[in-house]
Image 1: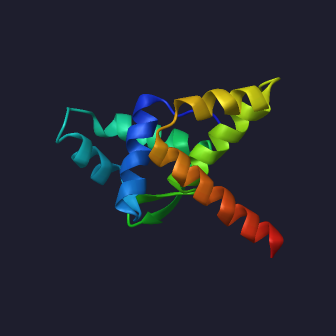
Image 2: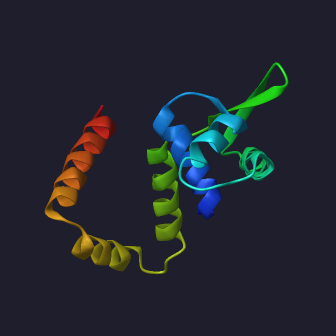
Length: 122
C-alpha cells in the first residue's frame, strides 16, 4: 500500500473522522471551509482512491457514496509493515523508531504487544 498524496490523505482523513459514508460533494463542502477546491478535483481523487482499493462506492440517486475499505489504524499498520519489510535491517529500524517515541507512545506500544500476545495465546 502506497503512502497517500496530500489531497488523498485529506479526503481519507475526513471519511475516517466522520465514520460514515459520504459523497464527493460533502467532502468538497467540508474542504471548502478551509480552502477553495473544485468539485471535479475531489471527485477525481475519490475515484482514484476507489481504483486503488482505499474506497468502496455505491450509487445513491445520481451520486457515488464513498466508504473507506480500511480503518486509519489498518492503513497506518500497512505502511509500517511495508517500511519494515523493505528494510534490510528491520531490527535496527525498530530500535531507531523506539528511540524517537514519547513515553506515552512507548506505553501504548507495550499495551499493544500484551494484547497481541494474548490473541496469539488464545
